[in-house]
Length: 122
Length: 122
DNA sequence: GATATATGTTGATTTCTATCGACATGACCG
DNA sequence: CGGTCATGTCGATAGAAATCAACATATATC
Image 1: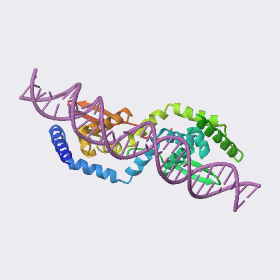
Image 2: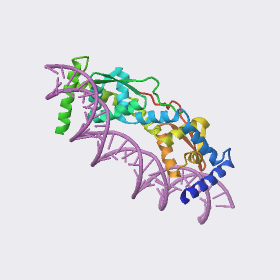
Image 3: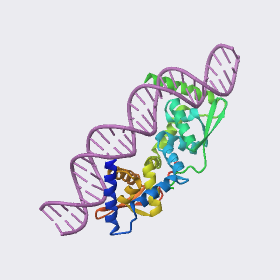
Image 4: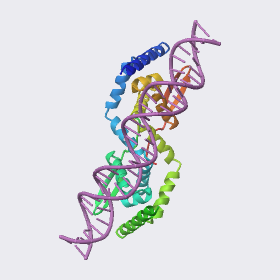
């Protein structure tokens, strides 16, 4: 706690030194700025999509779906060369992030990419 | 090793069962497909960019840079509310992924967003 | 209803990554 | 040159996440 305060104090001084040479605002303005971005409508969803695509297997699944349009879980598993629980987990992450849509047809589960899934900077 | 072979064999059977109701290819075709995508020009760079943006602090830094155009390391640190080594590490990850450009001016380091940094599905 | 099959869930284990204190390096100034 | 300051690097630690065997649940068939 003391260490945090000391670190913040030295950061305040640093910002002040920089402000002598070019425009700069108060440390708490930066903090508020960050809070506003985090609380923005797009930030949490963007972060979630980025995390979902930040795994090799999951990005591969997305790329496969882009190529084939629609695939069954067993096909995705074949391409990933992983165990079925792992594939189930990964596809659940993609679905939860709004990247894929799933559809059950009897015993089989089919996946498709959704629209507007690119990760841009919010 | 034996477990892997048994698992793959059961997956082969599963793919065959599905192929009776709709088109399906051989397991090794899926494996080759995956290898081709991984080896593609865009896959590694896309994965790297996704990983870089998949951290709350780094996505925040990118969003701040989008808003302000250019920021000094100390300003980014103020917004992130993290220690300077952590900020240094994060900005290094973003630079390495080709998301930010850095420019040293004396003792100060300035960062800017690069063009075309969105993460799409390759 | 019993059995087989496809996939979801759980928990343990391993791997990966964010974080920071300490130290190192480079720029600036007197 | 010595001292100060900004940021890079290192190593240890804690937390997050990928992985799979075992178990659970849902669907299909006889």
